[in-house]
Image (cartoon, rainbow, N blue to C red):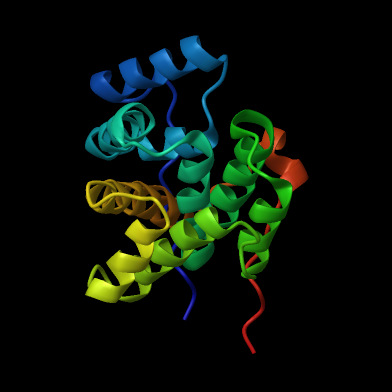
Length: 192
């Protein structure tokens, strides 16, 4: 059976509902452009607002560094097989957070992460995803033994929630990868 693709267009600040339009205008004023993903999210002002607010909260109060955030975002996007977010977060990890390329490439290839601290974060992110939020005491102990805190467990839940919003929306809209992210295109592995 064919996979559903939404017929809704990517919205702009001019044609979105007022709240979503204002948020899109702020994104454009801050960055000079509106990623196509945001235009699709704007079909639901609540979805766009939740995503933008959640991402801002993660960047400014989660206790995770920019590199650690990219590790979580990439790990979740790899789990959900999101071509758009894998390209976007790989690009951002390379250019903005300056994450080690071997770490980014390992996550993209679903291989062991070659940094012990970041590997523990990627492993715990995968555990939270595969256990559907039911980590064991040992899972959390391994996470905190790597230098993370109990408070960062709910922050990681927020990161997964934000990537669920973006990844699932990109699946439904079959969001094309923005040109600026094209150097880090990614495709899910073919099913065997």
